[in-house]
Length: 389
Image 1: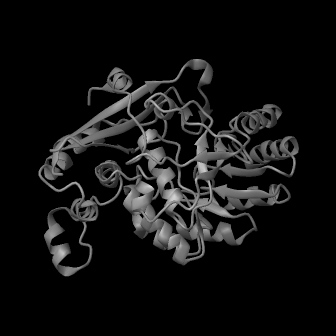
Image 2: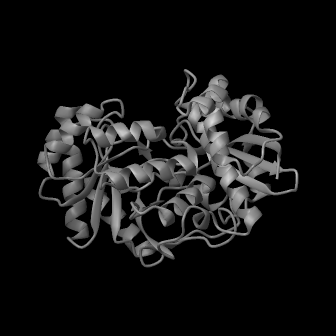
Image 3: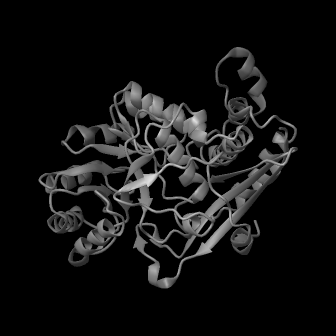
């Protein structure tokens, strides 16, 4: 089961105008990702995904080039089951052998960002291969599935005050969701505008539906505190990314300023960043993105940190199918997980890139039980939307 080929593509899928939305990232006109295919010498194929941007706000040319011309060639001939060894080799770079011999990390200078995004794509694909080679779903390899179906929450919510209630209620009706998330922050301007939208949402939903808010890291400490004060009677289930990820101390200050749980981590890479969040008491809920944080391997380690600090895990899964399915398996196996993000904005990278139908019923999503990650790539759709990189 030696790695024979590694091929990555920049996949860009247009979103029809009627389904586009606008947030602090701008108008989301396409859904983009780096999709990687790894094949072994005995014909087993695994699929992975890496990302370095949100929505249509980034260029994936450099990441795809890294996968095809820098990382891919290092993997040829390696055993595809050596997932942890390969992860550490790629993270430590030219000092990989020294790191192995010494028993501690000696990573290359560019150890986060695009490097870990590329490692993430490889890691996800290797877990897919390992599961397929053994005829087992990935969650079985990670320790088992704690639930056949996991609670899911509807993620979206960009409408103005006069329409946000109906928008979120439509989410609840579409899949029987018991929890919904809306966007706040810089897209609105001042905190009181976001607070008015939250109040309208809570009034429309009533007290039985959990309501979360996501500021995409766009507030200052002062404005985040002000926002919490303005919505303190709205019973928010969590306040996501109130600040830029670089300000972990500020995040701790915001968390200490109110009773709303703080969720963060979609912009963080590796266990080391999440260790710092835990030690600084900056968050209640960790949200690693498997396509950015370091893949399935690192997401599970991050879940272990969450469990050790009595925190919870809710991966960021606004992503393509390989990342989304990776998140399902992590959620199924991690003791710290409790909910799955399900995007209600237009997401052809999940729904059209694979042959399977992915849906939520009664607020629950099924955990795949097929070997590997449990999806089938639509080769025709992939080829139609692959870009030159």
